[in-house]
Image (tube, rainbow, N blue to C red; front, side):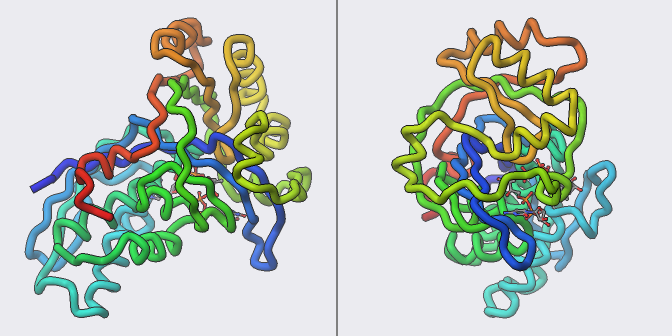
Length: 287
Ligand SMILES: C[C@](O)(CO)[C@H](O)COP(=O)(O)OP(=O)(O)OC[C@H]1O[C@@H](n2ccc(N)nc2=O)[C@H](O)[C@@H]1O
Ligand SMILES: Nc1ncnc2c1ncn2[C@@H]1O[C@H](COP(=O)(O)OP(=O)(O)OP(=O)(O)O)[C@@H](O)[C@H]1O
């Protein structure tokens, strides 16, 4: 039985904002790729009928934790369909390494891992489409983590087409500030009128993130970090920040630059992967 489950980070290799919907959410065109780096969840199924989180996440009450919310949502939906084994429960522990509010999708990835793992451990046999649809209620980034393949996403991030961008090495750097996603989306200076383009056209153009200008303007730390990284490699913001990534062809080139980073910058080096580490461990048993 698999008990230790990866919850990888994602990067938005590009991110364009093409409009604002009447409910306030934004239509995007973005390219997601996973990193071979992230949190780890230990998930042990039991017959307590309850979900217990053994390791609270600092600053996040358990009731709001996406881990607990994902497990309870799955429990509820499976029970509605008479798929939930009697007294099904689980204890969950997390080894959290991804920064919160970092644009690396940590919370969404945690939620997706819980959905995929408990579907497997409780033998619910729900399809990945069904889990992705459930995940969307928890966050716009959850579906891509559930599906587990690098993807071009449209809509608010839920309309996915598998993609296979080059699997580069990345230096991911955190400038030491946390950025709330809604603050960026609500900024009046954000451009929301990038024309909708075909995926094939976007893959040929230099990659860009429409949130970057606003975030660099509001956060001097991000601005300085992007300027510094650009001296060494193509570099951009991921999601709505705060993390920034620089791309390299080799691990050693990325590590060399990390070694020179200013001391207030926390960073790591990881490989971009088109199949999520979560799905790699399921070994193709989940379609
Ligand atoms: C920026 C991205 O990280 C790109 O991958 C995601 O679109 C954000 O995904 P997320 O963090 O899972 O975001 P959610 O928890 O769904 O939404 C947080 C808030 O961000 C804003 N939001 C989010 C996604 C989106 N397409 N348009 C938005 O305007 C909304 O104000 C929303 O209330
Ligand atoms: N298990 C969890 N891990 C991290 N954050 C969580 C979790 N559960 C709830 N949250 C809440 O979600 C917020 C966003 O966290 P997350 O790590 O997903 O940010 P992010 O990396 O900026 O994501 P995105 O790229 O989707 O914008 C946190 O500030 C926190 O309040």
